[in-house]
Figure 1 (spheres, rainbow, N blue to C red):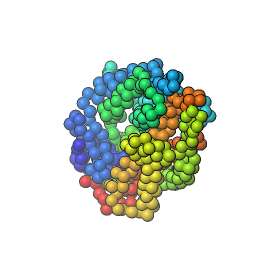
Figure 2 (tube, helix red, strand yellow):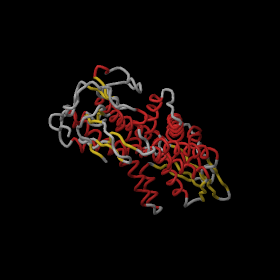
Figure 3 (spheres, helix red, strand yellow):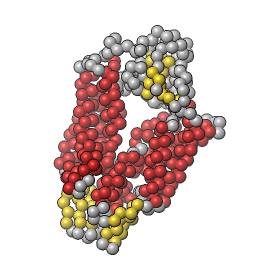
Figure 4 (cartoon, rainbow, N blue to C red):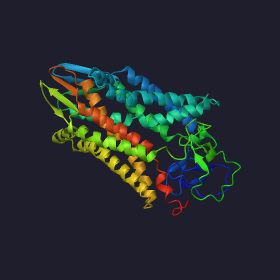
Length: 419
């Protein structure tokens, strides 16, 4: 890890979290450059990045194909068995009339991973052959936007909890598709770990004729693309980035108002999401609707304290923490607070990262209803609370995306100078 300080350089980059300027310098392979003020990653140098990404992307594509060909899980109960495939959760949600949940599960567990893998292959295979694909920067821009919505890790955790919940009442047999999804998860993580964006983006600045040797902190005559971090003159504001075609703006438009609106909406929806049941488990003709909290209690009653704690944190604690943290950050900006801006920036990054894990319950419901379809023996029905909860998760994700962390530092630029 290298903290970048001011040196002579022909290329510059602005931190995406605090907007302080840094020169782009060569760093050893296996290292990353981080902001000297807020600690955010600026760029990294991955040895043989192109070879590694191509290898892992090809492997991911093979795992993805296998995961859609073979059975995913099989449940056996009372001489009967029910088998599902990866797409079964989406299809069953549609059959029960919850189209919004079906779309959400399909996009985050199937469509987004497919598009990310295809996009990576489109970009990196030509690079491996010594060429550059057509519109490579625009394609990579969309790949970056899709990456946060590829939630295979959360989906696989939902599978694990579903298996544990069903172990007491039936035999659950994993299929080849399940193991293929494990391989897909590993290769997708490896792709992210070996990405070296500078190979794709190239030069970080269009300010070759500017003297930035004395720039300290903010310079309001410069603007940085939110996607590819291309640094250019502020006169380009409101135009599209000449490299990736992203809309340029000095700060995210109406960030405070939009984030407040999304937060308040999510807070109101959080109440029915926890009051109304999310599913009903019918076993031998008898069943009782389950809320999120009663589902946690059932795991505790079955002796699975660890999984109960995991579901409680992901489905109850994380949404509340995210709402509270974002509200606190907005208030601190509006009251021009200069208290510990670095810690507040790190707090935002953590909150943004953990937010996606609230999708756990939605995936769990989709997996259970697609597997437990044994008529009078056992069935599971989705309830209204699931839609409210899914809305809370999606809206808080959009709230985090609309928040502008650089505004934390805007009021403190005279107090906290770059180093």
